[in-house]
Length: 396
Image (cartoon, rainbow, N blue to C red; front, side, top):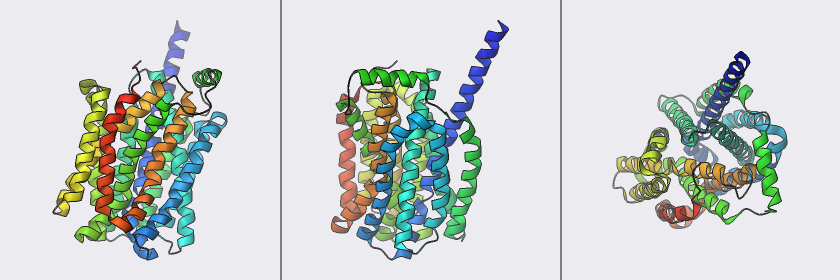
């Protein structure tokens, strides 16, 4: 009896440690990627690049992520989540100061490539770990995990914006984020999953027995929904500050306010996601979220004053908050592919939207303007309500 109780307590403690590690890892991803947003106007001015050239430079982020995410889906089966998370966090620590320091386009391109590689790998690893932890707990946790990512993003953008507004240099602001990232890494990495659990291997064996070499249409549609949502988030992160400066003459030190409003709304929506899903249901929460996000981005396009733009980004953040967590939960419940393979596919499409999409926004905006591009993205957000019907997965 005592041995049973002890084993139960040990398992509970281990699960609690893994849950905390996952929460901190998501926070670290949000912190490190969002800290880049307030530094973007400074980087563009320092490099003397227009929208098209700067957008082309941002393609390096997408290239790094697109190469890293499929590879991570394969490596993680052998190396486990812990090794991937450790290397990714180390890379992020290396490149963040470079964004605030270099005036060389070549060095910036290399740093952005490594940034995309680290963010993509970290995203796949922690989402797979989140699926495993959520499955073992038999509770809905994905909104909470992604909420921590949003909270990390909010912390990153607000910290850097506040430091820049008080006269702190971009380099010192980036180093402050790195110091916080070191502390989080020390707490998160030791309790990350070192190996993929046996349940995941069983899922893989079942999937291989079905001889599915290509992703199923269900997985592709889930990835497409996540791509659109992350494209919206990426455009808010990388272009909201530049949009405020160019369209409304806002000072660079205050340009981070747009993404700050976006991050506040997204964080609030994700932490309330578990209750919203219970009240409205998965199907309805996706529909309402897509409409809210589209309305927010349309508001950004037609806003008569930059204060109204902030309101638009808040609506966009609230709308986007629960789309991706619901889709990742569905990936964890589906049985048409192995969890690792399906998650790698959906993550690749999702983070491609976040990391490659902003580069396409920059290139397109040079020809037709940011307002027109934002309007097109808002239209894409409305299609999520339609695609939602084809991505349904039965709840456990």
